Length: 630
Image (tube, helix red, strand yellow):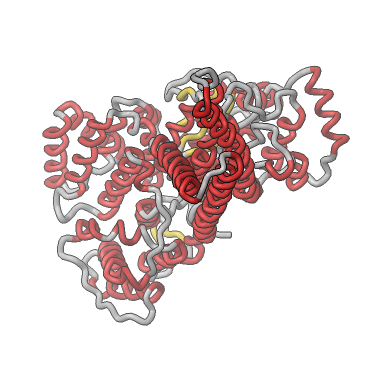
């Protein structure tokens, strides 16, 4: 199943969630009306009031919870007691976690997520939360850091990244909001019974208590419906995430080993410190609550293990339990024994900067959000090959802004001078000077290292205060519009940064699944293809026209839209991004293939062109891994 098919499936799951929510609400309202009629002897008017009241409570409860989660993944992780992992941590377990997540982020083509650790949880668990990759947070328990070796931790993180790439996080947050509304009546009834029992005497007080009891009973029905919805939505996605993690790392032992430790160590995967663990049970890597049967949010642990290691059985699990009862596993110690210290950074060298890669449009589309084992290995090598001063700058809060701005400097001296003036005027001369200094170091980077460097700097950037991020966005816009000759890659990189920052500032607002069809955005299609074709062929207008027609044939084979590159160049694309980003997932797949055809009409793609393609795909939320050639 491709990324675009998974996105289509995620959209169907959202529609299914809405339908299940509607059925659950109808059932709860019916129970409230029935209770008013039987317990209180209410007539039609009282029953109508009860129905409207129940709907209002459920609706307002859901809206309140959804609004409270607009902060996205970071908000969810913080609510669960997560502690942000510092960029300069010296804790060896946290350093290992950061290295693994950095490799996964670069290999999948998404921004580095915010990292959290649940310090007081001895169980082995993890989750990913957020509306989109731009506001994603990954949290792991201290038990996972202590018990898992590097391969096992990698398997768990790959599982969580599959949720990020498949669109599951968005569904998970909406599920939290929906289920809170369903449980609201029960919460109200419990509060009244606890705090209102001695508040008065007589018939009115008795009716209040009867209503509270009715709300409590209906609340149990809501809990039943909520658990059923969570279980139905979650189990199949956990199976898919396990399979994706194995595809990602190309070895099942790591993920299987993590699951075996969950099954074998005493703490398992239960969240012990959080009374509200059930609210997020559908988001966790392992079962966090102990619910079984119809209410289980995860397949049975032995079933998950056997899918990865068919020879594993209950007897083998018994032996592991006995061994770990005497001496619990130590992940860092196992790394030393297995020779995993420093693993993950060996890979084939990067292609020469002037190399040309042999790819096809369907190959590129199939590679979107579908990293393979050599992608994460290559990701580790890419990070290690970036000069240490630049890596340190990407992780420092005072240097991330000038570093990202330095990536946007144009090759033309006059344009670059105007860009520097914009930085100095809006952020101060010191930032402009730091960006100019970093530009010299960035000039030595391999083309395939520029986007990964931006990905490393992004989580540090979004920690800046909102007013500073607003100023940063203004500077990015000014730099990418400093002159009509700004190169397409720099323009698209600036657009990618703007999209990611805006999404991280207001995640809930930007969470959406597209529904537009290709026929509704013909002008936008044609404009993007014309700019890409023109940028790839310089002054050769005829070659650019052929490249444009190659892409147009893929996406609009029955339409004749003449080649008309805009005079303003890349800046003309400002109007195309939002309409194209709202395409139906399968239409977006055709768009990716069309852009690839336009770049590839001569049969091969240069490294610089492949990075441009990755940047455009990033703007359109179709993340490409760093290596296109297979």
